[in-house]
Amino acid sequence: MLHVVPHDAAGDGTPVVLLHGSMNTRRQWRTLFDELTPTHRPVAVDLTGYGEAPFPEDPECHSMDAEAERVHGLVYGHLQARGPCHLVGHSYGGAVALCYAVLFPGAVKSLVLFEPMCNHVLDETDHPLQHDGRALISRITGLHDRGDDEGAAREFFNSLTGTDGFHLLPDGARKALSSGVGKMLLDYRTTVSTPLTLSDYGQIDCPVCLATGRHSPVLTTAISAILGRHLTRVRTVTVPGDHMAPVFYASEVNALVKEHLNSV
Image (tube, rainbow, N blue to C red; front, side, top):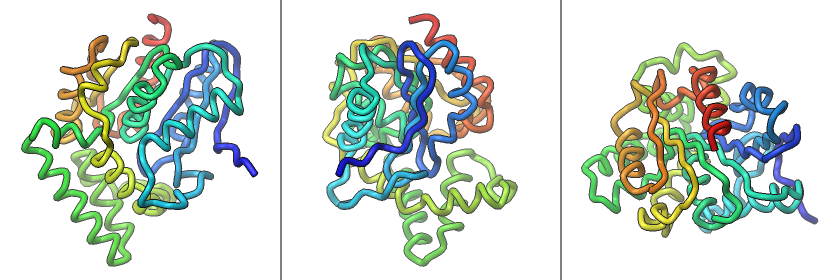
């Protein structure tokens, strides 16, 4: 029995596939989804292990290729889209969007990426921050292994926002983030172990809008800077906020997405 990938879809026109970040769900894009419905066909997807989507059956074999193929099957199989689509990806979702563009170049009209967490590029370029990324994941893994997923989520959130704001989140948000720690750790592993290279990304032949937050941590902005030097048709933009700007500065990020879609 085939299982339909959990998603929301509405509207007509060119599909815009919305890919959320780690420890989030397709609901991350609910405002942008509503804003795009009159002019496009937004498709918000739950990536594996988040929202209504089950955890990968075989985590050891999970990959970004599998995430991208799953999205492709939804958009061009179940939804029967015609013509290339736009992809909008935040963090891990941005890494999946880049993988998708490499695997299915004819299916992509453009990309909007907010700090895609392609962690492997730090290793590929021997960037000193590769050690910071591993140290962060080591701390989170230790907390997770001890059963302290709230502590692990706090470490993740505060590190990627450069704040001590986790305790200020509503209870529901803290619980939701905590429940996603296990999959987030798998996301990190898949983005480090992917066989994709910067040369692969350099072959992407579509317009790319690459956005970063003005106050984002050096780890995420370093990854974006490396990608920006290798993507060939890229426009780089800075927006208010930090790595979580698509959530906490949604109006500014959504305006950027719509401006990009109207320009390509």
